[in-house]
Structure formats: structure tokens, C-alpha cells
Length: 224
Image (cartoon, rainbow, N blue to C red; front, side, top):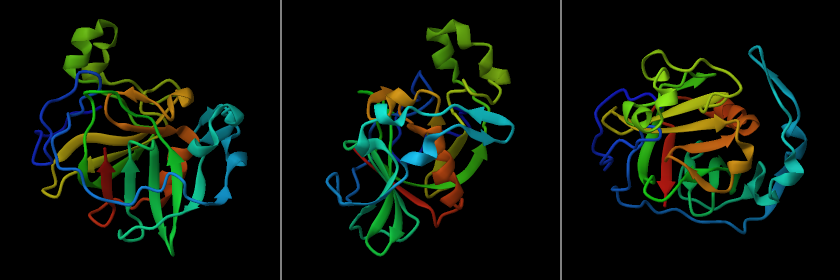
């Protein structure tokens, strides 16, 4: 994704070749892991064909997605404030804290081995149907995408960032190079297949995006 600033004190050590992310270095924060949380409400009907900003997202064959990776409200105990995002990469879950002991839980795809990171950040800004700018390191290994390094890949159904992207910065206001974003590859949800960023089904990232207000109040905790 777009490399904007120097890698900084979140403990990010190197820009990853696949998408410009960084390797694990920051201490792992603590949070409650609730992989067996009770489901309060499900949203299986929300994965149909979705018209959005001139694009028509195809329906997700949701019955092929494991139930634990479908969007749902679950019981969730956390010391974090309402509106906090907790990413539990071990579970392959992202929690958006709703308060009153509940959270909206989304299935996610996470970074494969060597492309992981843990730490605390905030959503500095967000974008609908973002342009994708792969880093030069990725283009070296995949020459076919070199044309996108400077000009970027236009928004669209095949864009690796999907329908939405949320950009994570550290407390000093510096880009961590990590994003929460959509993906056209719905079958990758629940796996460790990405180059470090956290990917969601497009219908899910649209829902999460609608809840997130950029700024220091939107804390993001990533647990490895």
C-alpha cells in the first residue's frame, strides 16, 4: 500500500515487499481473547450484491465462509473504550467495541509468517475505493505490477485494497504502513495469506468503515 512516511517507533523494522508493511517488533499489547464468545446477532443476509459508489460488489457465497468468520455481534469483555478496534490475529478476528459487554466481530485475513506486527495505533484517515500504490520492493519481485508504483491502480473490483481502507498511524502521527482494508479475495478470510495488513470481506469493511471516526479517539490494538 502507499508508503507515506518513515517507519517509526511502533517497532516497525522493514518495509515488506508484498505491500509495504513491516515486521513484528513492538511489544504485544494485552486484551481479552474471546474466540468462544456468545453470538448475540448475525448478519448473513448482508452479503448479497451490494451497489456502492458506482461499483457493484458481487454477492459472497456466505455459506462457504465458516460461521465464526461471518460478521456478528458477540459478547465481549474488554477494558478498552467503546469505539476501540481490537485485532486478534491468532483468532483471525477483528472486534469493534460497542460497549455494554458487546462487540461487532468480523472475520479477517492476516499476514503470513514474517509479515506480522503487533502494537497500538489509531486510524488517522480513511478512504472509500482507494487507489493502490504497491511499493517498489514488491515490483522488483513482481514486474507485472511495476506500472502501479507511481501511478497507482485505480479503484475497482480487482483492486487489492477493496472497497475501503483505513490507515493506521502511531502516537507521533507517523504512518505505520499498516491498513485495515477490503479484499476481493473473500476465500482468504480466516487465513494467514496477506503481506501484513488486515483484510476484510468488502461488505464487512464497508460496515466497519461506517463506524470509524478518524482521529486519536479510534484506538487500534493489534495482538499477535
